[in-house]
Amino acid sequence: MSVKLVGAADLVLTSSTGKPYRPGEIVVAYHGTYGPVSAQWIYSSAAVTVAGAPMYPVIANWLPAGLYDCLADENGAGVLGQELCAGSWLGGVTTVAAYGFVQLTGWNLSAVTTDDSVPALGWVGPSSTDGTWLGATLDALTTDATNTGNTRSGFAPAADGGTSMAVGTILWHSPLSAPPTL
Figure 1 (spheres, rainbow, N blue to C red):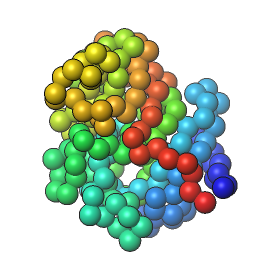
Figure 2: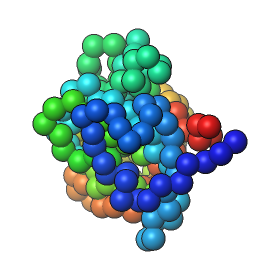
Figure 3: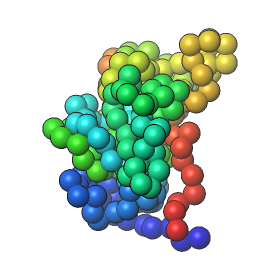
Figure 4: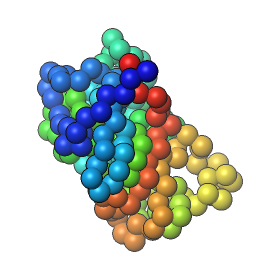
């Protein structure tokens, strides 16, 4: 198996044509400050209005023929929403549909919007508010019926203390993270 190593600067690219990566391709980059990260090249079939937003696979189109289609819309048609989050969008704010990377693993390379609920030493997952991440203690995740195991996307050593978390404050581990593609 080979791993495609790319420069960290490539992870913020967006494209209207899909080039220079294949939809679904997983890459690894080494950031000089935050270390290794992995990301997947996907198609956001609508604009992304919040940088670092949770991205949700459009299940019917989550395959090579469907260009690994995602939405930042938690209630969007065909998405499982909170039940399955691909990762954190790295392409910044977009005004139209575009290809770009979602971060799967490593320290967050994009600041994210939170709902002021991320506790120190807590889990971070997608919320029901588009573009926003929520937090929960490990105990809440194992006992609260509103939080499923699949929503755990990251770990936060420190609390959010407001409605955002800076770059390098969440250790992502997406439920969709997998070995790099060949």
